[in-house]
Length: 178
Image (cartoon, rainbow, N blue to C red; front, side, top):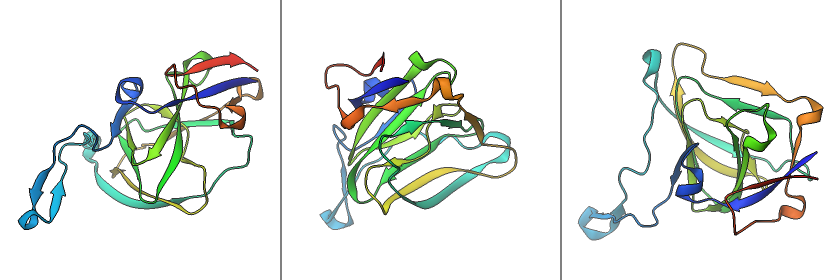
């Protein structure tokens, strides 16, 4: 089974898969008589294909059994999908360019202050939280057309996410035989 080491989530490391949503390095506008800060243009919501509209949801994720084994990937051909945590808890992001090519997988550790906006057609694992009852705001597409494609992996291609949750701080991702 392939093991994926987890890299810190950075804008540069995640760029091939979408956008990191965070306020770091973004200058806010003061609003509401100076009692609030507004951070604009944090992500590009891409949902208009085939008459789609913006859908805003609340997801509450549950932790999966450990060791975490990747058996399923999904993508959304008609729109992007943004996940933003609400409880400040760290969470995991697993993406790939081709579900049938183990070396194309990447795993990232997101802080509880970072979200991701998966680009249209980006293969990703469904929500991966490390603690139960983890709430997320999700912005994605609603409307006509089929916007979900799932790919169940053959057992020989299952991936294990970093045993013991090891984080590789020196590389965006490392895949190795385990």
